[in-house]
Image (cartoon, rainbow, N blue to C red; front, side, top):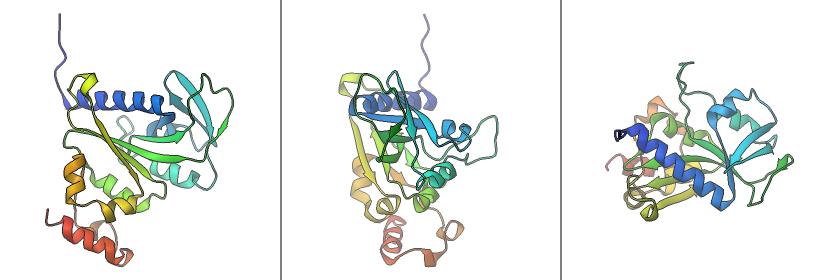
Length: 204
């Protein structure tokens, strides 16, 4: 008999497992950014929903963003890193999905566990994305399945920067790592509301 060690990798895998099951139950299909990147700019992508594979046509107006964000954030071909976990879309709950589906509701998705925070690359991506992002958080990933609670929010990248305050960070256990603004964006790209949020967050 053996027992796996409790590692960050194990916790991350459990978080993704719960997230995928929740997607299936709620009628959402998902695709990893790695699989988007491997698809080589195709118009139709294969999403997963439970045991189903769903062929989804990507609208032309969001295709540039999807393939830009799905590029690896590092230069390691044998161990690529991607800025978010998934692209997801609403497909409903059916027994099968035989044809190419035309979907209008898409968003990025990121799963956090414990006191997980946004990385530097994720922080920069919040300025770039036009699609909303769904952030899912499980405070205690080692809890028994019956007692697992998943908090989640869906917001635009800029709304996260504008509206997330210390209370919401505390509630969801998710915080944005604050780095020097000058290394990421020009100050004149920020509106006054975002500047005020950064000023407040930097004091946390």
